[in-house]
Length: 164
Image (cartoon, one colour):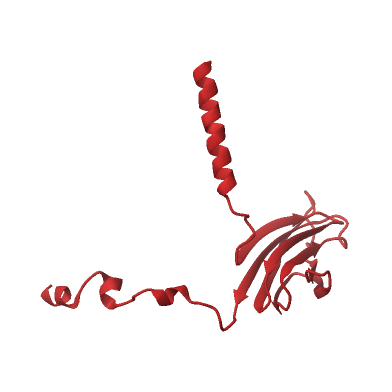
């Protein structure tokens, strides 16, 4: 019994340690997600962006589920993008897909909403991607720090190639 308690405590400590080091899953420059938006509801998500960056959102309604009923599916959803201060920047009404680019002018969390309030019966499955690009001149290309000589790329020197 004592050994089982120690084993459980070690396992729990390891789990907490790993969970504590995990990064927030939607905090990167590129995110993609597939969601279900039930009839009459709205699902919203947030993406951080800084001034001088470009926020690109691409979405597509990939399914409209009416349960077991086999009828013509309306693959449409309403979409809105809001600035960090709540101002509506982009709005689509009953679109099946779209691709938007927004030049960010203020730092903060941008709100993306998929609205299915116009539907009374159909749950929409929406796939979307969010990209945050930095097009500024002060962008440092980390690859510039590496030596890409042919010897390093191919792990061979010119003498080794001539000999073979």
